[in-house]
Image 1 (cartoon, protein in one colour):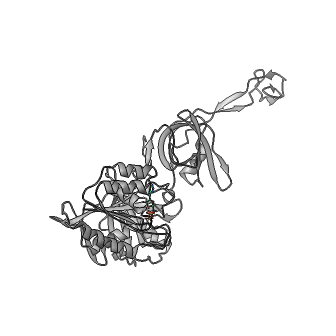
Image 2 (cartoon, helix red, strand yellow):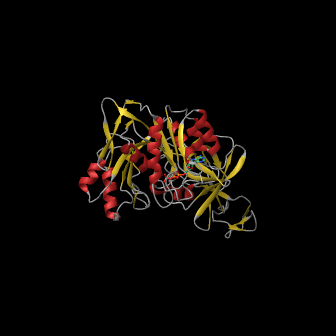
Image 3 (cartoon, protein in one colour):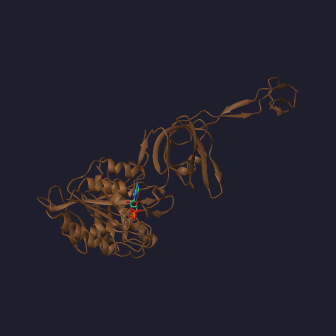
Length: 427
Ligand code: ATP
């Protein structure tokens, strides 16, 4: 049996991942593999924070079990084989009672949806919800057509994300270990945050733990949710001991933890080399730079690029580190691979890799062919030697030395979107 949910939290609290933990624990369900934390279209206006939806294949485990979580002292187990639970409606009602207890229904942005299904539908629902905008009617029609058990409250928009999470095929994935302190974590000093991020860093496979540029422990989220910290990793085994190490090594209390399989840092949201761009979708494509970056008030930068017969505007908002260097380094004629989201007619840049750097020549006054002195301007496209009065109409061109420039530019850890992977060699 698969349970999927979304849209249970609002601006001032809650977290759908915590609800999944609560459901698994209260209903005594084991998880096949790992519960799934699935990020959807990062440009969607309805999102509260990171547009996440949840799904878990649950049942009663057979054979070897691994502890992957804990809630109020009670373990949550993962197994490679689980026996199905026969009564879908019973589980749906019991899980829905927990959703209604914990969901932040007063918040106008909270519109919960939950699906209980026998099988995982094909990945098309995932891809459309990740890469475009889906209507509630469309999601509901599909859910009904597939005969799934579902529950929803208010406008039921959460059904869109629940269906998408349910259909995620997990072809590429990473993992995140989340520690909770319900309803809100205690306050930690910067020093303690740094030490816990250092512990996370010492575990092989983890990434994005600490943002050196902004001196920020990125494993600690913004407040107002029960999430104490979340450590991302490519290795789901070596991270299992992290909660125990935090508990024994630091003055930190938490009420539960759970390890998720996720589509974070997979670049799954990018559509490749599409002919034209649609609002609120994300793309990766090769293009030629047609203007050098120029700033507007507020520290935002823009440059133009040419793609499939049209010129577009690219935006870099408040660039820092890698993106600041890009602003400095990029030149007209550079052939680049751009990764970004198309919003309000502009491509908001998430990362860039340079495929081929243009040769750039700087125009200057020539030296005199007669006596070798530097010539002076003498009207437009005319030069005169101040020593021997020789005339020339040919300027000199010197090639700009560009070997200091980098090949890849990306946002610092703290400014990176959940779905965006670190740019790799040859991307
Ligand atoms: P958190 O990260 O704290 O869990 P959130 O950012 O995930 O919060 P939600 O509260 O889940 O935000 O709200 C996102 C809403 O947008 C959900 O109702 C979800 O179903 C819907 N949604 C997600 N992707 C799309 C899409 N592509 N088209 C239309 N609606 C979408």
